[in-house]
Image (cartoon, rainbow, N blue to C red; front, side):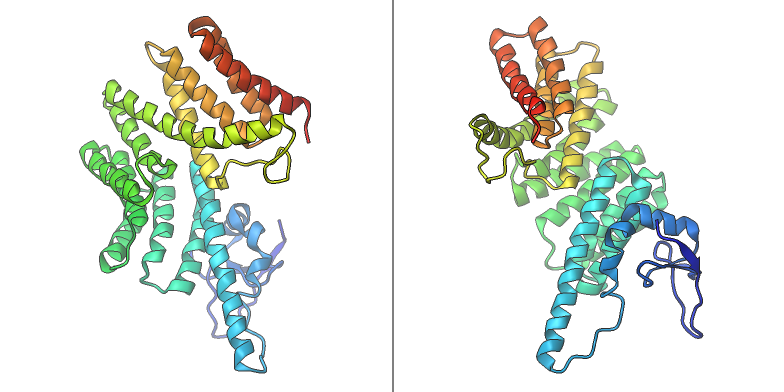
Length: 364
């Protein structure tokens, strides 16, 4: 981490902390354009996102150079906006990944950056701000700060209500976060209402069987599981696993054929290819491992459903080229299949395990 020093603030100028907007006393000496109230918030921001974007902030937070023509000036502004749009999505993905990994504290600075860049590009009342508000709400819930989560959600709701251009995907995210809020408050009736709306809007945006719709099913299943309505929960957990399995299987089948032939369809043998960004990979891991834990801890375990989740996790890690974890889950699946399932199912798991073992034995 870069060294920080006390900040000499120019007379009449108020500099604010990047994390909490309190008066700043320190500056990042690597970029010299980012300020903090103290060492705690500087370290938090560095660990979350600043290390990744430190140098990218310099052209965004320094005066534009002198241009000889209006054409050059317009080009400079377009470049500036493109950088900000890139950082909107990058910071958003980083924050999402932290949330799916359960790192709520680390998610906050990255989400704040995404929110600020959105404000700069789209304005203070744009519906484009809503995804960042929802990230901050979810991070606050994870930290047990329910009042703060409600404030972010209220801002998101108000922005959506004022907008005439809010898409189904944004409505889905809003209802999902409202569902999570009411789950935290143990108001399960209200939580179910919002998660049903999440599933509806996600289905309109992406389709009923899309991985982006699966999160609503997963959280709804968790409610049923908490209420000891195990049959409903089981049905939804199975549906979620099927959605992820079908998605991953499309990639798995294509890559497994090409790898067995020693040919990669993209010309890059053994490349990580899940079709997911880092946040979506983290979401898949969290959802599938949660379902696996529930399957394994059930009073009457269902070997077929347990093997199904294990195979799906093995495919996920195989496509992520994490062969040691892929082999771990595939081996566990084979053990259960050998003891309790059909010869055909055993053969399916063996084929998967053989493919993983071949990759692990011949690293690129």
